[in-house]
Image 1: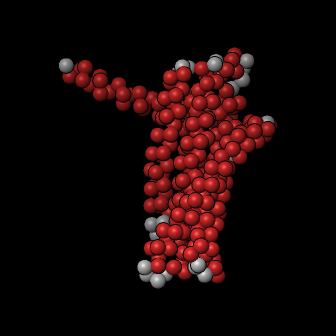
Image 2: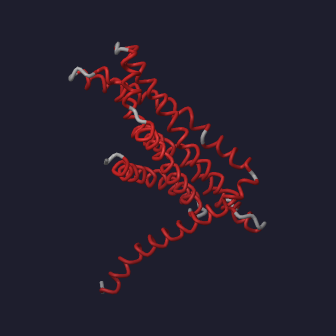
Image 3: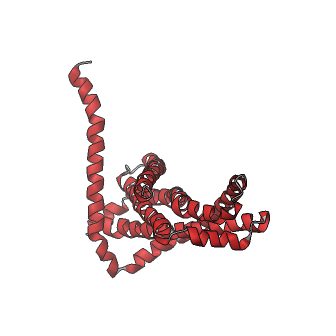
Length: 261
């Protein structure tokens, strides 16, 4: 193999990767540019909020309850060794609002709603519905992508808040009702130790960033998928993989920035 062929094989994937980043950035900018048009048709956004957010509520609620119960149980076993079981409420609240609430909600959202969005957009492209919109002078980015994008951005923070609230309730059920931690200490330690801006607001900000990343990845994978059933299936898989890795990377970066001081 000559040096020229070797460089060609090495450079082609890199070139394709850079092209995909550039095209994704252009698609994101176009979507933001046409988003004000949603103000004239709010029904499109409301419909997607129901489909993306409301249909994800059950799995988010049940997962939050069980995660809070497990966190309460494991937290009690750990704190009891040091005689600090009265701080169980603080441990549960901080663990949920700072990390577990936004991260697990984002992962569940990527698995439930993200894959659904990718498959839906991919099948619309395979059925030439997007091409038909362009033939009728309808912008598919404005009509199809933008309502789903903003619905995802709005839904993830709300779902994360529900997850954290139900998780705290699950920790209370295990810690207070089953194990016997003092009820007043559970809530008072939580009230005194959780800061609205540093803990709750930062967790909320994480969920907003996760919502932007997951929803755009899901829509972009479906929008760029080849119009074949096989490639739509592969795009759905890529949505879960890329979204999961992006969530963990963003979580590390934001945690380092928010809680380093």
